[in-house]
Image (cartoon, rainbow over all chains, first blue to last red; front, side, top):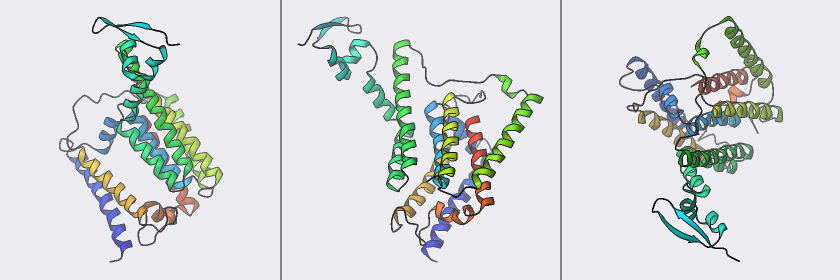
Length: 66
Length: 243
């Protein structure tokens, strides 16, 4: 297995973990908060809300802006 | 010439002497004692200690170093605004006893479905689709693409700054096992950072250690791919400012 394969598998594991957590949270809401609930919690303060929106804006800048 | 000014320390009920009015501005402890509120410097330092501000400053540093000064500048600008906002709120709390930070917006009317509201929603969706089609037609990293994404990003940050678009009752209960999400996000970030640092140069992609943006290059090379990704980005942004 090459370094490239290992890196890609690493990303896939992280993505699979995120999807699994979300599925568990939706099916068993008492066990785990969903990503939406976590974001809502973080975004209760202005700093948290702006921080999350800035992170979103940064993704767009990163992929499209020079 | 220094001027002596008697200052009443209301807490202790005694007096001390400030040798110059300017000292109050330079010495936070003196300023705090004299005004009964934290000095601007101390309040700003409290803003600087907020984790999100620290993260934004780190992103600003890394993006600037990796050849994206515009990203870095925007992150730095928002971090600075947040520091000032935190300082202002902190001073306001100590002066009035009430917080002035977060504005809670939007009445329950926002949730009431009406034909007019549906029409407005449809118009927004049409505008979003037009945005994706037009901006998706621009080459990546071109000035038109940059201007379009920066303008929308700034607009959404301004909307986010005002407060949530709809009132929500979240309760005060802490979220159980939310740390699992933090573990996943931090793991992804570390993996991306590891790949970035193993590149031959911060601005040159590595085949052996690709970053997420290097892996998405083939998708973003085409007009439909760019438009689809922009659509997902827009929807996510709208979801976030609605929280």
